[in-house]
Length: 335
Image 1 (cartoon, rainbow, N blue to C red):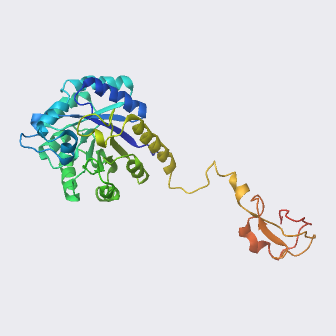
Image 2 (cartoon, rainbow, N blue to C red; image 1 turned 90 degrees about the horizontal axis):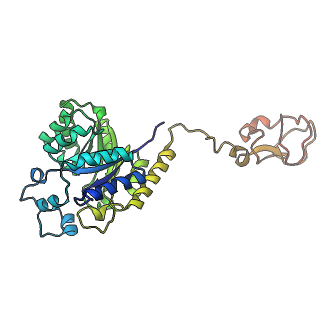
Image 3 (cartoon, rainbow, N blue to C red; image 1 turned 90 degrees about the vertical axis):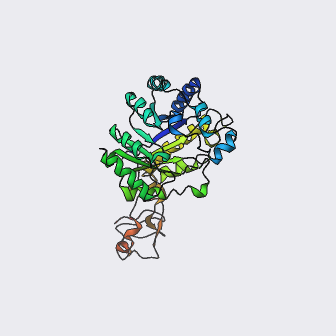
């Protein structure tokens, strides 16, 4: 059974608009063992109006003096940089993906032939955007933060009407608060999404630490997305809720261990524990010296380790039979 979980190391805009930092993040994502490194592509003026407010967490991390538009202008890379970043990923040996936030960015990324498009939570109610994504006929991984089941169903309907099959769509349970309070994670909703829509599911994490994405994998997540940064103390909106490289690697390593631990639904003695049967199980043995021909009773036989003799589950079959030979104290009984 293949339990491999796709791990997306979300660089996002944690490069703060600096190409050299984005390149460093690619190398760190590769070192951590992630399958993909993901950026965010946008033409800020096409995404954010001049009247759009900052989120509260953005005000806390970047101040309230500038607008959301000005903040995003400062931390986004020019569209031309993504071709170069894709080439770096190819050279390093890690998958490249970037989330487009507007229609122009979708067309900019399409020639890069990404393995899938990542739809962010904020675009799940954006009909023109979803139609544009579907028109590219690539698999889609869609985050569902802030959404209810009806909104998710409507988004899936748009994608399917645009030509995508249900098996090309993966849904990520998500909470968009940075950082997400543990009491608001609601991992159990991932099962609800899987059952309702019959799709692959995963989890996009914005909590502090690594416990929740690891738990999500144990609960069946097939995709994990997690923000990371080179330094949590850097200026910018998302650094405080991101993992530094060593913690990202710790998360990936833990997830890979859990992948192996999940195994299959078949319950059986594994190769590693089969030798322990002799050591830990018991057999029917002589409780005292027994003469040949003596009737075996509860007074002259008992159950002890090792487990390489007659199983105690055959106790009733042994009782009342005659000893085929003499047995010394503690010797394994034979029939």
